[in-house]
Structures are given as structure tokens and as C-alpha cells.
Image (cartoon, rainbow, N blue to C red; front, side):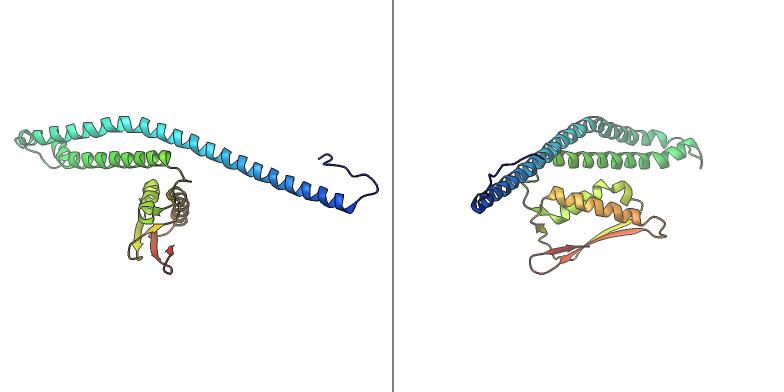
Length: 217
């Protein structure tokens, strides 16, 4: 990569030793600078991702608020219609009988879906505001819940359960964001591994591993 220095003949061992030491120190310094540059670049990418997540959350939240508001209006209208609809006979299989049976369920499903969107938006907003370096503690139970919520579509088609056998006090010395990323990956892999199973199920178990550690299986 080019000359670092030079020595004159005859070579003096002390000079050679000094030159080698200088080379080692400069190489170590260069490696630290490069590592810091990589860390800074990573932090900048995370900051951009946080800004993007915040923007997405805002764009999703606005129309979702309209949806939730309209569901409330529809439910009130439907309740007010009940006395008038009761005056009409509703034969089994008729449109009116179908409406009486299906409309309340449809409204409930719409509200449930809209609430799930709102939960995802809150998760994105929290992610956008998090500072991994500032986080020194997290609540394991909350992080598991957040990770499961992020994978609701995958986990919703199988039996999913969380068994907390730790006896409570699940605060751990780890960034919630880092832990959530680990759990999302593990839960996603677990869900994929159930493909083809007759009764697919994924479970998370939390238990004590000594006085100061928790084990997640």
C-alpha cells in the first residue's frame, strides 16, 4: 500500500523497534476511526429509519381515525334502525335476516381491524422515538407482547401462547428495541417452521435462570 517510513543502512535495532511500534499505534488508531465511522453510519441509518417510521405512522393514523369515527357512526345508525326493522318480517335467508345477523359482526371485525392498525401505528411511533443507546432497561413481558403484535398475521393462523413462569419482576438490562428485533426474528422463524403441521403452535416460555437472569424459550 506504499511506504510507511524508511531506515538507513546500517539498520539500528532501536530505530526499527520504534518504527514498528509507531506503525502498530497508527494502525490501531486507523481501525478505531474506521469502527467509529461505521458506528456513525449505522446510527444515521437508524435515524433515517426512525424518521421514515414516524412519517408512515402519521400517514396511516389519519385515515384510520376517519375509519374508526365512521364505524362509531354506523353502529349508532344501526342501533337506531332496530325498532323500525323489527316491524318487518325477516324470513330465513332473506336480505334483512342476513343483515341482522352479519352487520353487527362486520362492524365488530372492522373495529378490531382498525384497532390493530392503531396498535401497529403506536409501535412504529415508539420505534421512531427510541434511542437504543439511551435504553438500558426494558420490560420483557411488554417486549414479547409488542413482538407478537408485529407478527399478528403470521401468528394468528396458529395457536400462540405465552407462559410466564418467572414470578414477575421482568425488567432486564437490555434495549427494548434490540430485544424486540431478536424476538420478532425468532417468532417469525418459529411460525415458518410450523408449515405443514397438523396443529401448528408456537409458545414462548419465560422462567428464572438463577437470581439475576431470565430464560426465554
